[in-house]
Image (cartoon, rainbow, N blue to C red; front, side, top):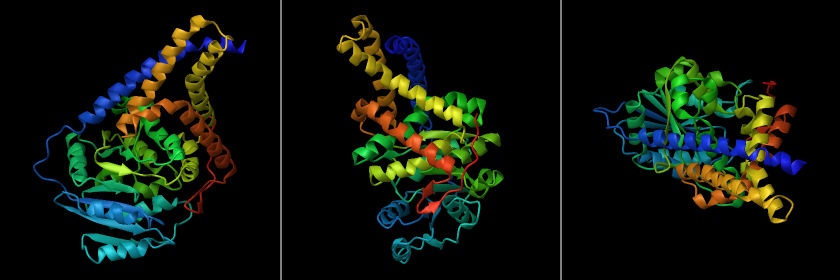
Length: 386
């Protein structure tokens, strides 16, 4: 009977949730510890690099927040990636009043390259800093952000530093979709193991904030070597790991804010590009992971409903309630890391359902070569079974 089969998985799910809680708690400790270093005697020069395409609504706020950084030695380069709106003019107006800002015109994307990867490669080519900070045009930075991030990078003796900005969401579509990547990263990647084992499969980064040493960036081939990769942040972290260099994640919710998408519809389209790509286009692991999450988070609720309707034994309720309570904790703690309102953790069933729909769409469009981003088609990927 289906109900009995689902119930037989409750104890394994509870055991798995306890393991996840252990990972989450240790990750939170490491994320905060990376911020507890003393400032260096001298800060190295930094190049802040921002690719921008059709960002007229957000680019001014982003650039102004970067220009006001409390950091002794930095330059700001923004590349207009062939925008079709007022982005270039807005940048030109700001640059006319601030010599620290350099605006670069983007050249056409060559075959075999993703637009963002090509934009970042052009920016890196023009940069002069010892450290490179890649950040997105939809981010807002606290004045002390760059100083704190460089301090963490040097204190951790890392080659790449990334972290979790505060994700701003205003519509229900955004609330159900945007937090998922942060949640999955904090929940399923044990940083203490990833830092020591240096396995590429455990590498992590968030493209909204990537601080990297120039030497490490160049040794991996930089964004130019990423080609058509749709997850440039993860791929760059994996290359850093493969090169036996160190990467670290850090708590950034108090330093950087990002509204990644301005609507649920745009979030739905944007994450379609990323989900299957984040798994390296590996079909069976992709299907298994999303299938297991559906079972782990939705089956206990379904069984509780069955028990309430008299279709399942009342004796099951305690175990099922424990499972649901653990589920809320598994969502609540990572949400606090990303500065997401923790009451949204109560809506985790809707979150899982919404993201599973995106995952299915990502799989379908990726396999058929129909994925697009910013009005430009992406190359059809080569998928693998494992």
